[in-house]
Length: 64
Picture 1 (tube, rainbow, N blue to C red):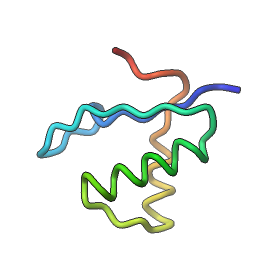
Picture 2: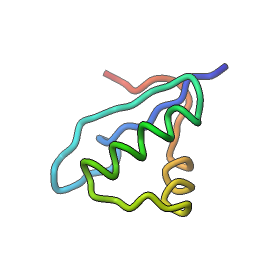
Picture 3: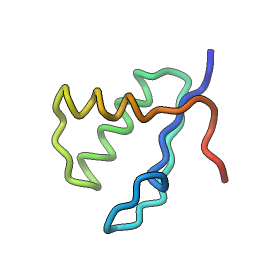
């Protein structure tokens, strides 16, 4: 099983978010990423948004 991650530092925003999330499964990472994106960045939880987020996942762990 390959760990997956998404890192807000790779996607500049007005708030300069520095959060990185990692998980052992895509499902777990997707749920955490959606919660963060909705609560912090004001995105809407839609099927299209979930597909977009999932396409941004990378293998491994975020760099320090």
